[in-house]
Amino acid sequence: MPRRRPTSSLWHDSPGGPRAGHSLGRSCGLANDPAHAARPTVSAAPGASWCSRPPRPGWEAHERVAVASSWFAVYRLEAGVFALYEPHQAQEVISWLILGEESALLFDTGMGLAPIRLVVEELTRLPVVVLNSHTHYDHMGGNAEFQTILALDTDYGRQNARGWGHDVLAGELDPQAFCAEKLPGFDAAHYRIPPFRATSFVVDGQVIDLGGRQLEVLGVPGHSPDSVALLDAAAGLLWSGDTFYEGQIWLYFPGTDLDAYARSVRRLARLAPGLRRVFPSHNTPVAPPDKLVALARAFDRVLDGAVASRPSRDGLVEYPFEGFSFLMRGPGPAS
Image (cartoon, rainbow, N blue to C red):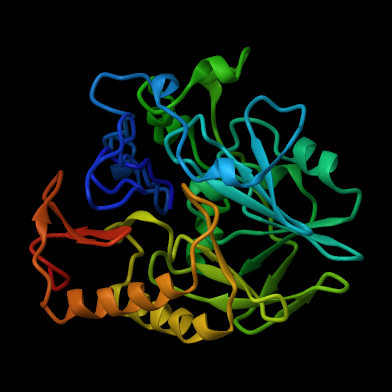
């Protein structure tokens, strides 16, 4: 979801405490609801510039790929799998370029702060199709740069495809959330996300054949009504979108459905025995498959009332676990 990782002990960090210079801020713009335009932005640390935030640990273990863009940090996670990471903005969103032998799929297009298509074209000459993990603005910012876009056919997605105005997005450019020096010449006053049009629709269980690589679309509603994951069963790879990532998982925006989320995380947990790696869409690029099992068990405990929450901001509560937490409306799931 469009969110800025709030500076909290978990902000896509472990619940043991905030890492120096990191925050949990996420600003999630949902459903083009004007009520979210004034939502508090995320920050690196109280009063600190995002430019002063130290690099997030974990990325250094992966192969960095040189590209012309100063905004995207690109990493090759394995053959034909590239993470296009935006470390200089508080969302720390990760878009994924997945290559087959005949075509490629771009799973999300980021914040739309810098052209992502130019980066993709440096990495492959294959024809590229876009599929969003969901249509929160931090995942569809570059959609309009592409001609072929797949989507779930939902009212929620159609509404968000109309784009996002500057009034909703302006907070993403606060110095505590955005390192402007990494985008010289950027026109902050006119930052917006343009509308896009889906060229065709996909459904749960549909297989996208890239040639030598088949990706199954998994409908995983809950975080949002149009959330999907991607499964490469032959390679043992899962792209989890915002259904799972290491850090604080936001489950309180319009469109969030806790019962649907519970079903979705249980579904992903059942896949864990056949997986080698999980690729989330924020913060860190790789998680072990057993995290999906831990996620499902943890959320069941929350719904069962077996876990104590702790107060967070704006009347929200946080349920902490090892490596992730759930941020929800207080006093609990029933509220």
